[in-house]
Amino acid sequence: MAKRSCLSDHSLRVSKRDYYHLNIDSLLESLLAVSDSALIEASFDGLVESRSAYSDQNEFIQRALHIGSVLLEAGKRYGRKLSSIHNASFWPLPPDLTIKVFSMLDTPSVCSASATCLFFQNCAKDPLCFANIELAIPKVNVVVVTTMIQRARNALRSIKLVELPPQPSLNKQGKKSSILTRSCLGSLGANGGVPGSHLRRLHLHNIKMMDNTALFASLSVCPSLVDLEIVGLDVDASPTLKFVSRHCCLIERFVFDLSKSKDSMGRHYLMLKRRLFDGEGNFIGNSACKELVLNCPKITTLALKGCRLSDYNAHKLLKGFHELKYVDFSTSCFFSGSFLNKGDGNSLEVMILRNCSRLKKVEVKKLMKALLAGKFRLLKHLDISNDEDIAYNGHLEGASAILIKQLLEQRPNFCFVPEFSTQFGESYDR
Image 1 (tube, rainbow, N blue to C red):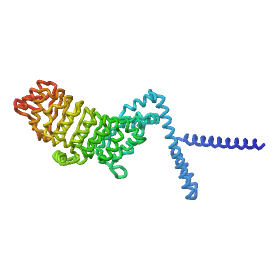
Image 2 (cartoon, rainbow, N blue to C red; image 1 turned 90 degrees about the vertical axis):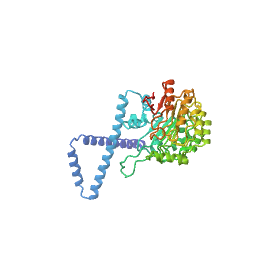
Image 3 (spheres, rainbow, N blue to C red; image 1 turned 45 degrees about the vertical axis):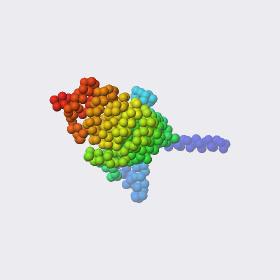
Image 4 (cartoon, helix red, strand yellow; image 1 turned 30 degrees about the vertical axis):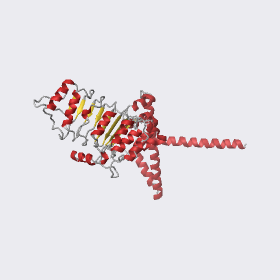
């Protein structure tokens, strides 16, 4: 008899709960069936005013607000669910192919797609969608970068971070747009350095807060890098080259540009030249060049811009890298160009020496003769132009012009920049 009583009580509780749910369903259906919002407002006002005590009125209002917020969130949640079901049924690609498509998009596009519906959001959470992170927008902070690296995990292959000038408008708190901090790449060392160990490409542009310590901490967990760009960071040249040569031995493309560092951005070119000549931070020593050549023999592209590079070290670099095809020593105001006529760098195809204010005409003439003699036999592009015409004033006359004419006749596909003209006005830029 006791067991029957328990079953009876349980059945009674279940029936009451079912009745309660049915009653709520009925109330919601009746409420949602009302199309006249003015009628609902009038009924609500009447119910509030029917309560005489202020505390009762306030409690009724708070309960109404709570129920309204619950209904609002429930509607949004199920709306997203319906959208996801709809997109999953009408979207022509299965999840695996959708993830493949997302992995081919740029990072901002993946983020925009993930915000459209739950189906795309779930697809965008796959590590492949963040294998190649590229962020070049004014408002990027360390939280965004860290989240993307954590999502990528061991699928991470490349990172490009470009810090753009902040927008003039202020946010709601009256503060400037967020910028990347010196620890923005700290998550590369997470999980025993798994994300950084698979990274192949790292481009860092104008991250003003990053110094040598922060940069070295990031590079130390990226032994597989083959493509490294360091542009506009406030770091010292020689220590950076040494650290790269010791920890990134597989590197094939190395771009190191100090001409756009935060101390020189927005200044006149003359101020830049003075900084490059006087600043010890831009000096590249013999040991740094020696280690780079010894430890990174696979380099095919080398750009050392805005650095104090001597003729001796420039020659050492051209001679040491046997696979070097592209070199850029622009905005150097230290070497004279005596390394040009020594004929090293037989694999070199492109040489850029823009705005090298101490580059001498006599050394360029020697280079022309060396080219005519068969040295630098693969070189097809030479740029010795100068924005302020410090070195050339746009013309080479006499013997130099004749040498250029002979060179272009011998190598018709050779490109010589800037465009030099003879006294007869004939153009030799081809």
